[in-house]
Image (cartoon, rainbow, N blue to C red; front, side):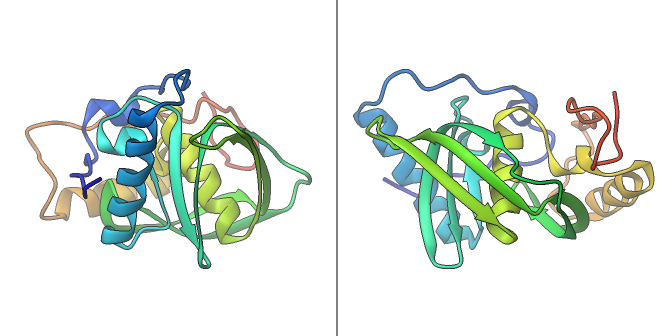
Length: 185
């Protein structure tokens, strides 16, 4: 278990849908430990396996002193309540943009040992669960922004010292269609 380098915006792994976990083995448990250690070292609220270059449906979270992980999450929303507030990403360091999300979420998945897990989140935890699950689908929070928000985000990204202008990034619209996010295909 070690702190791993985080893949940055523009890396193709961040735009690829992750595969479901089928083997709940020692390798998976090591990945979970790496995710938690790296996330905490970076001071993040969440970190998904693709951000470490691993194409599996796993993410870790550390929100309001609740540290954990979920494997193969499936989300449902108990209501239509929304939240709008600043959102950032360890793969897009230093950029925070107001992003609409659902206020409440229920995630069904598994622990690192294959035991069923239900995670109920509200507020920041709900935002984290939605953000990290998006990573597992190859979606970045930038994709959730309207056209003006994406333009502003790209301006900030191009000005960031970590940005690599030789590798143009892919910005895409949300695959989840129109709705609370105001973005369509």
